[in-house]
Image (cartoon, rainbow, N blue to C red; front, side):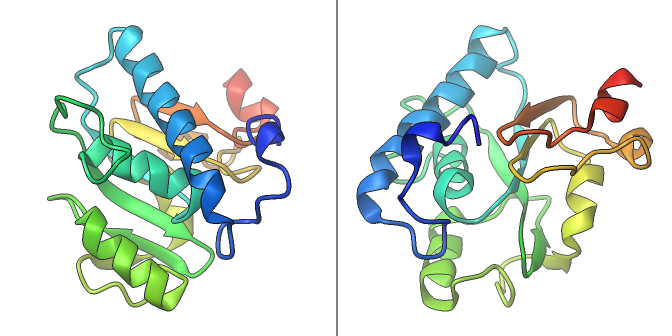
Amino acid sequence: DWLGHDLEGVGNGFGAVRQAESQWTLLARWITELIAAAGQSGLRTYAIQGCTGLGLAVARTVSGYGAAALSGNSGAKVIMMSDASGAILNDAGVDVARLESHIQREQMLFGYPGAEHAYSADLSKCACDVLVLQAPMQITAANSGQVQAKLIVECGADSVSQAAKAE
């Protein structure tokens, strides 16, 4: 909620208004620039919750695809994404252009042919450098010991529970 405050009224992703795309792109660039500014430019693999809005903007930004791409792409790749229909995993990197076409056509990740299918719950266990979370209670005390990400970007209120943060 706090992160999307200025984006209120733009839809919830599947029917999101296109004019909000530039706001999502700016936010995605801000996230990736913060990671680089923190001296974490060696973080190359991303697992992202959400396949539209901010999630897709982060995927475009880190993979070097489209207008959202950062100049001088550092070779980062998206290896896992999830939405309400499930998750996809490709250790070699998801083809974001192909994924975006699939999402525009199907309105969900389910059925994307360029990756293995996985459960959304597996996102928090993904062996990645950066885990981008948007929904609440994705990492709790019960699953915090299974998190393999080096950095968690919490884009939603309480994506990581207080109990998990205390561990």
